[in-house]
Length: 378
Ligand SMILES: [Zn+2]
Image (cartoon, rainbow, N blue to C red; front, side, top):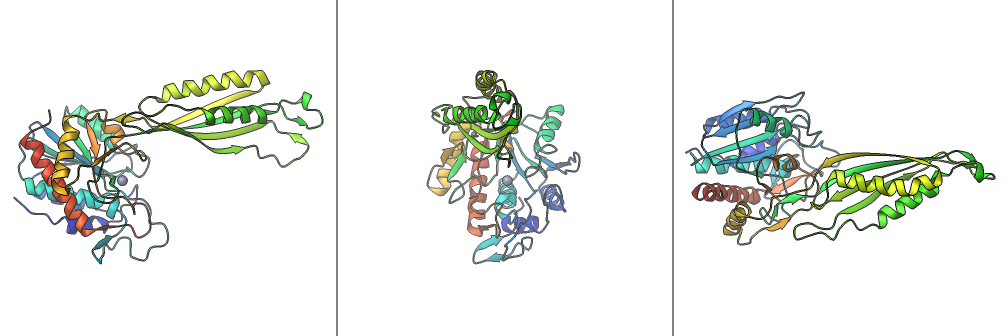
């Protein structure tokens, strides 16, 4: 059994400036360590994105750890070198320290502790999570399917905890959909409104109706869905002209009571009730960035929860809040939860994590693997 120093591996990963879509050698570092541990590795470049799939063992049950080595751009205001991976006062600094190179390192160290599993352990690592997420997890999952490789359970190592590693377990996420509305009327002189068709009152009524509507009351696992307008534009500086067009945009964060289709139908329905009376026409476009999903609490979530409690003394809080992650794709093939470090500094200047938290997360992942293979939740 080899031993891997999670901190040293996290530092080596942070020192590769893998800002999406660049890999900058980060996957080479990871692949080399996994090969040394006996994993069979596959580099899977799609488009301009490099990805890595590594598996140890070929039997069931198959436990997969999913994550990403790409990081968001540095931005401004750092007091430390974002790619030096310095440790100061017990904190590891660097872009990717929290999101999520340290979690990958913790998982590799945990897998090294377990040695040969009674089943399989794999890592599904993309370089495209912070970007378009087109040439990463989605394509990797298609590749796995084509090879008839079946994953039984998956943990995504995103920094979803709040204060300490393992205090929160993401068991689902809300979906997100963006809408744009354009109301077209007929431009005209303010003195002769009867000769124009003013789109502004139509759009105002639509905004009022949509914004006032309660989409749902939430349920046991999800907060109520929300709708928020992000802009309302006419762009008309003239005081004597009724404009010909008015635009608005809004976002809906939705729980598992809705689908993109049901929301699109609802919006279209509202619009068709309002617009025709005015003589104006409307155009609605939408873009879905994620559907809502839930890994219903059961054997797997219980195993993860009990394991975390055994290490930290506290069962994690089950949450479905926050933005989207690649778990939205993985949920289509197996139960998936997100368990990682606290994410307070992710995407910020001076991103950092306590070194002690990396050690704690390594202990959690190692205990989880041990418990999983001792009594698979199948
Ligand atoms: Zn991330």
